[in-house]
Image: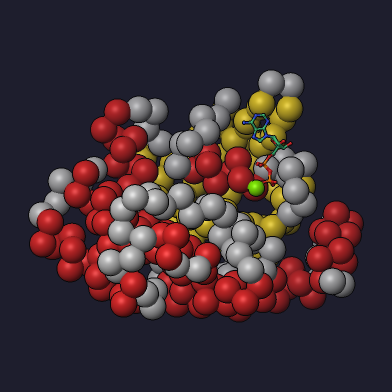
Length: 247
Ligand SMILES: Nc1ncnc2c1ncn2[C@@H]1O[C@H](COP(=O)(O)OP(=O)(O)O)[C@@H](O)[C@H]1O
Ligand SMILES: [Mg+2]
């Protein structure tokens, strides 16, 4: 991890009509840092992620990525989207394309890269997430855990500078959660800058550099995991932890 910030949010505000979903959010993510975002449902975690790659425009404040303000449109927005990989709860793979085609699509269509190079990179990414032998199958032939690993490989195929994960394991059967978290943990160890919204506290403890706790659109606490879990400062964080850690 370096001291230089890759992602900087400064006094970010976002409204949905009268609902103030991001309230003066300040957050700086260093290169190579892994930030886990936790908090109750509706606290603004997904909106925060979506704001970082500009799937949601913000109302005030600034977000900079790699030293530049987020572009509003056009080619520079397309470039930002390819530099910030995003993995959602739902895998959103193309059903009528093979696993390999799904992973190759972005680099071919958005980046206009050479097919042979893209294919080689896609295959090595599929190997890395443990599904190289499934490359010619279609998404429906794979388990949820395997599909989510394809979605991670697909994002990595664009050679992003950062990866955002929004509850990547929430839709999975319990026995498949581990295989996805393992891929994310190795990505973290390899130095990828990551913002991860998750309820998997084991991942937060072992893979995160920092845990950020959100409630009602505010960033309430930010601390290294050991410190946060041992000694949450706010009542809301204590209350949240008591609810999720007791079942
Ligand atoms: N597109 C939208 N239009 C209106 N309200 C929204 C929209 N997306 C999210 N919200 C509201 O904004 C708040 C924060 O949502 P979200 O960021 O999804 O929270 P979280 O991911 O922490 O559960 C919630 O009250 C949610 O209902
Ligand atoms: Mg959410």
